[in-house]
Length: 590
Image (cartoon, rainbow, N blue to C red; front, side, top):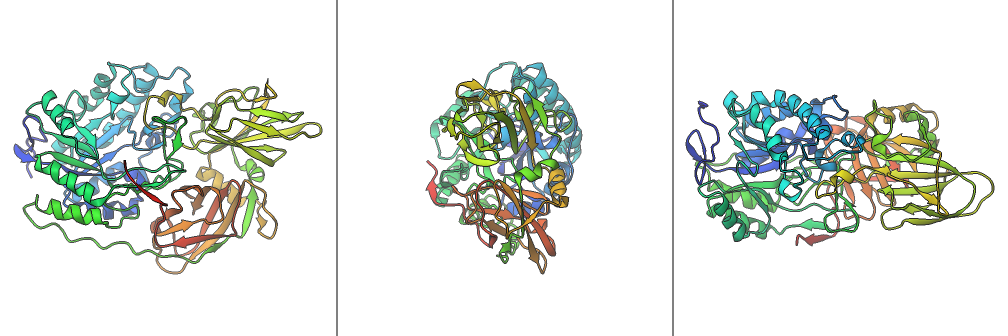
């Protein structure tokens, strides 16, 4: 089609090329879906009657170290935009810099926290300089995909829910600059932000919110930017579901009111690796998010149709002039034979595969460690060791972020976290090594505590009211280089010998035909992380609710696949596979 006038919000309905246009949107985050499946998920979106794809852009994945940018492979945003365009989907891009999204630190890179004066989401120069540098890189990538250049991007939403954070009234004008500078001149129309076009987020219809929109911006299009199709889950909680009938009745009402809508999420996907965030609003301590981001969305974590999907397709079909595309076939799944664990390697024997340990008088938080080219450690575990000469009461002074396994001479003593801040250390002879293996369980992604998301030991720890000093610190971020190095180490021990914990375990998954999606389940294991062929599938934890981890078929290959598990406390000798997920006991979203 000829491109003369992009999306406009000048009357009570959006217009595209001066024709009335209703956004029927759905969120699918490319960084939560294996690249091989991008097209599958977007074809299913198109077949549901959705006309606009919405996605966030996670700064922390695209700039893992300051000035080092990654837009390759599973982060190839341009390839994702090309697929959307080829399927005739419009795109609303939400580049942040802060995205919330139940994603670690709301998408902000942890190296920002190396600056002790950092003030995130404000016009503090340490923050704005970093944002400008990232946006310069990002804008180069996305400019060719704007509507005026023949691309699919019809709108950009900068920042996210700033009203609930607002610490600096100069910040939103600043953040719109890069979005507008590179955009207005070349035809990005709509910048959804409070100054451009207010949109609302909700799950249950509240007529007052819609009235409020009409009052503050009469004769403007009304849009639900995030219509929450389900909800997220926290470790130790229940699996949230939002009843199908409740969802469809709200969507019907919204459309009857002539509004535009974006389903958050249309397809949730997975928080692979260590990328899940944490929730702290109204809680005494942050609670970490689970690995699955199924979200009870219309398209399930593994890309299956649900009742919600069929109800929406039925409803949306009446808002299209021609019949919707046929439903794409679903992926086949397989419950593979159990993997028998063959070898184990204790945590202590894995340490020579880490970056050189660091000596420090005082504890240092993970972000300020001199690792990763002086960008600090972002994710995973950090081991702090110091010498003690007596037993007694170990007090964390609430300086552990977020959870520490405590060892004396490599023997497990107990756990310290937000709830348990004191532990009795048994008496012993002479000098002994006290070890604290501290896990970053996920940085808070929403709320007013973003500036306080440093992890590891963030202050002093005391033994018998005496401050501990003289630490040796090991960074265990479990990145691919570390895993490769573990593979080649000669210290693996056969399972006939009792493992000591924490430990790495490995076995082989044999696949005899073309690989299929599956789910791994770990009865008899307690808490840890699973890697398949070097890819981090995410965390598991027996407290639930989630009891299975999604294994994408494209990450497997024919023949032997290497499965490695890092387990903190107890292990079964096998890893089981199932063709359907287990997200735990359910509870309706309140």
